Image (cartoon, rainbow, N blue to C red; front, top):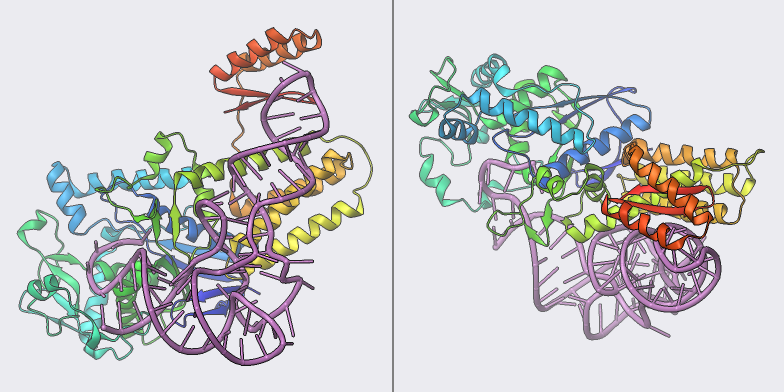
Length: 464
RNA sequence: GGCGGUGUAGCCAAGUUGGCCUAAGGCGAUGGUUUGCAAAACCAUUAUUCACCGGUUCAAAUCCGGUCGCCGCCUCCA
């Protein structure tokens, strides 16, 4: 039985999909006007975690994630850079997908772009006008009238009459009937350059909230199982999605709303002025690897604010190193025979705790505790000579099982011939007890970025 | 002001429907075993205590009351 915390009820709920086998999942994707930052990737890694766990538990998941490729910022930057909107958004869409690959995030099944679904968006706006939920204002924009939708606020639990209104909103949008009405269709203005589509209400472009309602309906269904996003999207974005979708269909839009908490960097909200703003690329350039970043993002609970630090990255590096080392030792195990009962019991107990923890709203800390408890025990078994091929295989299978979720296994690191040759030479001179030459070779290897460990099975070169 | 989260060891972080908590796990640190020296690994130590004050109880990190701190949303934002 799986539990998820549903933002709408604010409770952990048993997960029961509409269909026994197939789960529909929609996640809010990036606005592609720049490289995505590490906070964006926390969200994406969380989506990935949920999806992987659902799959591990036997569900088939259809995952849709939109690409917002038209909004104020994309238009503004394409004009500034003197390129077309499409040139700009293609560039950053590709960059985003590359970064996802680096962080080992499984790509969604469908990646619809907003600009490729304009007709469907126009249809939804028409439908909302016909049903009396939307109106065209004197500024030629179409707004959703929240006073017509009685459930408005049910997700964020905000009472609109108590909202402290931002001054900017009050000044800008004086054509709306109600200050909190939001745009479904934005009329073209000079700032938009040549970015516009024809519509029954004149040239313009869709509002941001609209695209998710349309794409979820278009590529999944009127009612979907899971919708995810960062907690900052709860209001107004997700609230508005509910209003649009449910006003149009008369059906529940989403059964389980799952939101990940914000990410801080070195204790502060990321901002360029504080110098703590990092894209995934920035971290890669500093020498961190995708799996290390992924592990940091994954290793604390998704609903808990995460403080991203370089200490944390170091800790991740060491922890992963430990997993790598255990794998290598297990792979080198020898000895025939069956697995011993003690090892079987340890593996089973770890597996049980692993599954129970992740089933409980993806509680990663105790799940990792189970994994690392087993690592320690496995090392003890190796140390005491209790390991044979069969039991090593049993442990490795469990490690692989956890890696279906974590996906932090080391890349096959092809050690260059040169390094292997040096390591072999060192093994030879060590037999001759030529320690000075052995140390010299170790220094040479270190300069080339490798370290060598002397194990009973022979030397082992590792990339530093 | 409204809504929500949070405060556990040097750092990160579970536990918060009260008692297997004499408080998981990771990183770091110190000592030991091992090693030609290392590395890795193992062993031991590293919170008499869970922001603070008071209360309930046979029993509280966990419940109740109060105080203080930090963070997010209410405006584009993962």
